[in-house]
Image (cartoon, rainbow over the protein chains, first blue to last red):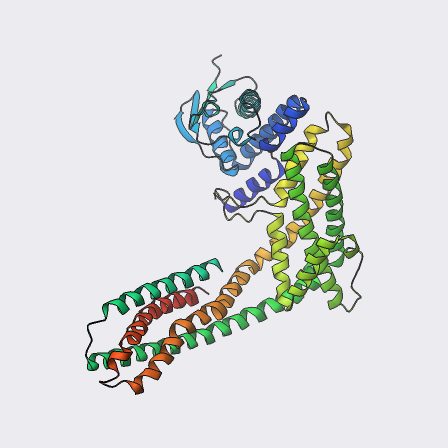
Length: 162
Length: 330
């Protein structure tokens, strides 16, 4: 990666970051409010990040390959490893060996974890696909396997057939 | 420090074990001629090693002085050009705002994770605050101006003790770089590569960003948090450019590398040298004392001691190799 590109990306991630889940979830759980705001903030953050990455790297194509590329960069900066399973014209699937939700405090019930997992995955993936593929042109599925004790979660991005 | 202690421990344990082994197995006497050869050879080995160690010490001292004068030269330039009074005062004012804001925020919440974040911020802000007061006062002193009590008066007794300790720690001009490096390390992550996966403590910059994101969500339901969030955001932006500039300058001038070399040279000059003395000079002296006394009649008496110093000569060679390896890396 060219140094100037890396510098731009570093600056981008320094400017835009989502709130730390291990702190914000206990707060929202306690107050019982702010879930919508969290989803909005996550959506805004990741759509801005995706838009800027496309600009910095000059990614023009609105396809799954671009989704995968952006995903790779976001995860590199957020130090979240993932392993791709499949990348086709219409589908990008991968597994993650670590999930921020697992690190949320022990006092948080599985039900609350599951709810926030949906909120965050929905907000983040929608932001990414809306930005790259266009609004409503993609869906994302996640199996929440790690919340049930598995070692990995699987996520699937798919474009919607028109 | 831990490395040196571990090394000492390993060498001492190895020496002890091998000595016991030799002591117990040396009941069968070795000939006088053999003992004399062993004693002469190990004495020669120790002598050579001592010569190399002394040369290494002189080299390290030279390197240390060279680095020290290079940093001293840069230090006065930093104090007069990079660290302006206005810039430092502005940073200090923001640090005070952050301290007050986060102390209040921590007191007004009951969520442990949130309190933890705010307290962490307070600790880091306090550390940077103290370092800048030290730098500011050194700068005033350099310009022949009286030391400012303005920021010192904002410290509680615990912080004042830290301030005094850090101020006293700056005995040489170049040591201001230790303060500046600590400031930039506390402020931002020193990642060589963004892919690098480390579990280092989060920098203040990241914690502040997290707090802004949290306050942004919380202020939707609690409007009183709008002002603190704006204050933190303003301070964060100004500090990002203020400390960021210093950090860029520091890296461009290669100061972190120079400091690291200084540290290595200092370790070699100190701990490693004394360690070398224990493993080389002590057995050498012992050999030199035994040599004139060694005769066919005293051979059996000196045999265990000669065995121990022979073992130490092997350990000394291992130590010497480590020492040379360290010197080559300075």
